[in-house]
Length: 103
Image 1 (cartoon, rainbow, N blue to C red):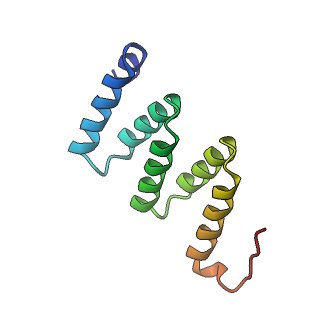
Image 2 (image 1 turned 90 degrees about the horizontal axis):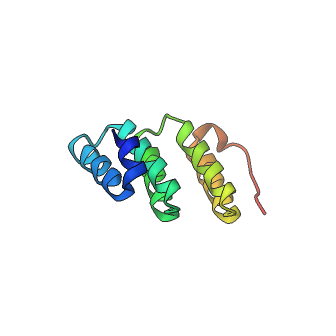
């Protein structure tokens, strides 16, 4: 339903998805749909914020940081890619024994 609605009216599709997220905040499927809409609408700030929310909600899922890195790289936001990589490395305790220097 959301996909068909999106083709007709992206604002209405986003409204449906937001209501679903509001009713079920832990539902990552609705958030994935919202990501698709935000990417198609070129809402970079919204995409990044939602990825950060997904990462915070499920810190064990390495797909979200990986996808955010890919998104940032494709958007030409190299500084943010390096910052995120640095943050991810420091969050992983097993990496702390290594020194990593980024330019």
